[in-house]
Image (cartoon, rainbow, N blue to C red; front, top):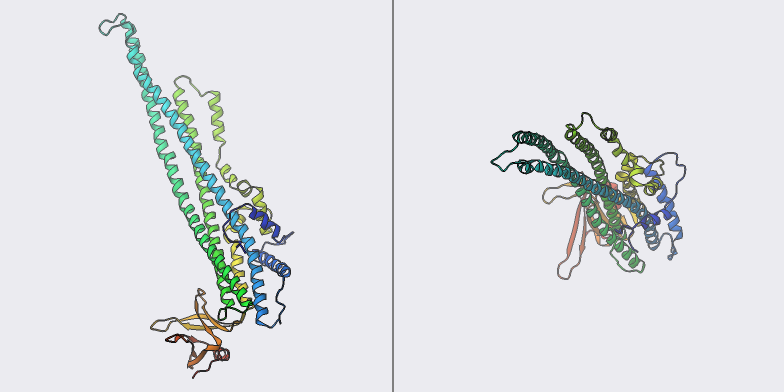
Length: 481
């Protein structure tokens, strides 16, 4: 069966998930974990009821327990796949919308810089004209040696001096604009990209790690399915279905944590884009005001007060506020109604606020992470579980907490508690347990496997309670020689 966790970014994910999701109406309070647990319980019940039971064995038989445990886990994974797929798609949509906003913002600031630079270039051309036109006007009614009209010549010189004075003023204004572009606009581009790129890289790395974990989960699902099918046909003796279940669930938990990291990364990116956009918007307002100021300064020699049109533009600029940027990042404005409706349905919460959306992006997988451990504890192919300490040292004894699990496949499995590391499998019918010390009670489990030339021996030194030692002693059928 194709894994629901494989990365196929299609909009039909929403449709598929909505059709199969459990619908909630008039929820009295918001409890994400209870919401998820109720949805899973109902979905598993419906899914299990719809499955064809091909193995009507004795309810106490190993075969029956394998079949029931497999169906239970498959139903759980299917529902988890639907909800997690929805959550992941919304994360991707938020990132896509942020990426679009970043592109539009960058293009807009570049257009503004081009607009102001074009103005500067145009004014510099005027200055250059004021400087070069003197060559022509100085030749009126004279040949360079004879001045026919001295008073006219004196007037022309004053006009040229006036133009030169205006040219210097204009150059000073243009130099101020150039400085503004470098210190404000160009610097804003660099600052914007620096602030955004770090968070965008974190998201891309999280997505890459998730994709790798998703492939691993698909592999474990296939292994679990293959082992189940072989065991139901009486094959794969010595293999352990619980061990494959545990690896599958742990792989899911790892993937859910990485999806949580994706949500956290896209939330931090959202906050950074919002902050940078507010700052950039303020820079744009300052730029427009500066642009108009320079125009007014250039025209003040022609008129004593600003024109009605200039006054209108000043009024419009004064109405521009950064709150408009903040409003554009509100949930409905940013996501749109379709995505908001899906999140509301998943949370059973209406209306949806920005803090609730960010909490959903970051923490929605938490409920599944907790329920994954619950699902593993309810495995029907696990007989009993004991707590102990296992020696993990090479030279000196290093005791670490562990779980000793007896399974329906007649095996003893040992896992570290802190990281679920697998420490060994011991066959009940070919292993023995020997007490080493009384206080504290330590015992060694030993399993010897016959080889073609040499036998191989696997051991584990445990520190455990007396009743747990007796329980294990009763499970291990081979007595010490």
